[in-house]
Length: 388
Image 1: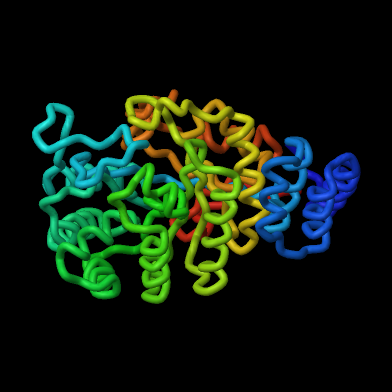
Image 2: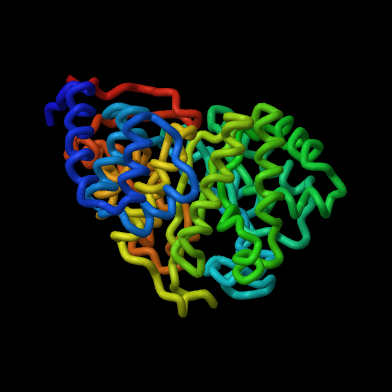
C-alpha cells in the first residue's frame, strides 16, 4: 500500500480530529485541544477520554500521536519465551498459570532443558529470550544467576530479558540483598533488560484484593528505577479489565510517566487485558474488544514520554492485531514460537501462540504501515522497506 507523506497524513489527521472533537463534551474538547497544541494531558483529561471520548476520535488522536513518534514504522522481533516454572509462592486471584508444588500440572525446567531450548531459539535466528514464570518458594539469587548464566553461555547472541519485578523483589528479599546488589549480580551473569510484568494496577486498594502477597506498586517502581540507574532498560505493563476503575488506570499510567521523566529507562508500555478462564477473579468476566482498543488509545495519549506502545498479541488474539494498529500501537511483540502458556492457560484464543515474520509483515502492510524487525531496544535490524 502506498503511503502519503507523513506531513500530509498528520495534517489530515488534525483536520479530522478538529471535526470529531466538535461534538464532544467540554472535557474531551479540552483534552484534545491540549493534544493538538503539543501539551501534556493530566489525570482529569485521561479520565474524560476514557469515559466520554468516542472510539473514532480516540483512533484518530492516538494514531496522530503514534505517527508523530514513529511515523509509519511498526516493529516486531524474533523472540521466544522460557517459563522455568509455574510453581509460585503467591496466590493472585487473576492468575490461571500458578500451580502448587506436587501438582500434576506443575513443572520445573532443568538447566539442561533451558540450555537446549535457547540453543534452538538462537539457531532459528531469534534475537531475544523472555524469561519469566512463578516465584518458586525454594529459589534464591543463585538459582536466578544459574538460569541467566546458562542462557548466556549457551546462546550468547540472545538478548536476555528476564524476571519481573515481582520475581526479583521476592528473591532479593529472601537472599538478603538490596535491589542494587541483586540486579548487579544478575547483570554480571548476563541479564540485559527486565520485562514489565507484575505491575498489575499500582493502587494499593486494588492490589490488596487481587494480589495481596506481591510487592507493592511502589516497590515495583523502585526496582525499575534502580534497574534504569544501573543501565538496564525495562518494559512496563498494566493489567486492566478486572475490578479497577478508569481512575486507577490513569493513576497507574501517570506513575509510569513520572518515572520515565526521571530515568528514561522504559522501552515500551504493554497494556494487558485480564483473561477470566480458570482463575478466582473470572466471575468478573472480561471487557470487550472495543474497551481494549479504547485502553490502547488513551494509554498512547497519556504516556507521552514512552516512545513505543506494544500489543502483546497472545493477549489480544492474532486476528485482532490489525485493529490495534489504528489505536496507537506501533509494536507487535514478536514471533514467540509457541513458547508461552501464561495467556493460553487463561483462555486466550491462540492457545499455541506463534507467528511467522511473513504473517506479521503482511498484517502491517495491509493496514498501511511499514514493518521493521527490531532488537530488544528498538534498533532496526533489517529495514524491509521505506514509506513513499
